[in-house]
Length: 139
Image 1 (spheres, rainbow, N blue to C red):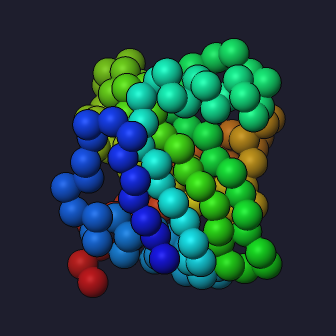
Image 2 (image 1 turned 30 degrees about the vertical axis):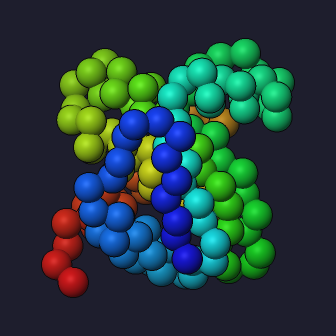
């Protein structure tokens, strides 16, 4: 089950649309959705998590805690909507498109994709683009 939680004033317009998409993304990678929580927050909230759990003192757009068991995806995905908005401006894309990219990025990590090296980052970006195309596919 995919759940959405809000620690700031942001709200997804259609949670079921996003849940369906994330489930289809997981299926396309031969995984199934278990318990996944998306927590939308601000920069300060995510910075606190980054400092407390990862010992990083930097702003970021996403932190994911992966509890996946085998092929069943479980985890908590924290997203700073402030950072997403700023990155959207920097990359000259819409907030909605950047939010989708970050949301699917967390799921792809749960599916085993990494982004530490240049090669891994390039593969992650290809996968993100592939999965973004699935967002508006008619059901």
